Image (tube, rainbow, N blue to C red):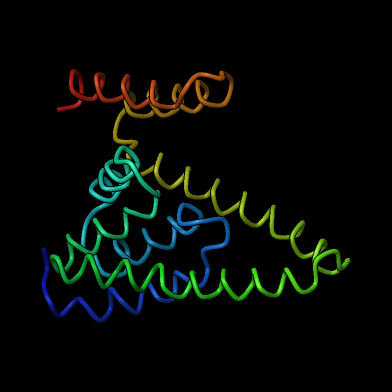
Length: 176
């Protein structure tokens, strides 16, 4: 935990990130990484990846990683502040867009806009996956586990929970 001096940069950072979160919280993970690891040095890449993995393992939305980051940076007040900063602006934008969309339903420009947002969201989510994989890639075993996990999820219809279970067992046996 770093302290109260970091609360304002944490909040303003997540306020800005919130406005970019096209495609959900996972889509802005690289920007979160830049803020938390590269810009402020609140944690290293591996600690960031571990917090993300913990947030994914817990029931609920994947944006829970923001609360874990906030807790690490400034305790309970950091957790609440980071979550409000990340979810508040996005919620207001989603509400406003839903109202607009209802009024202009069927308009050609709206269909074009929505279709144009899909590749942006996919690109942001792909960048997040690459960032997480590179943050955990310290040696051949983590790289092999990441590659195998990616192939398993991509090529099978089995639950991704199998990847988490096997990764946890392999990590416990071989990585620490």
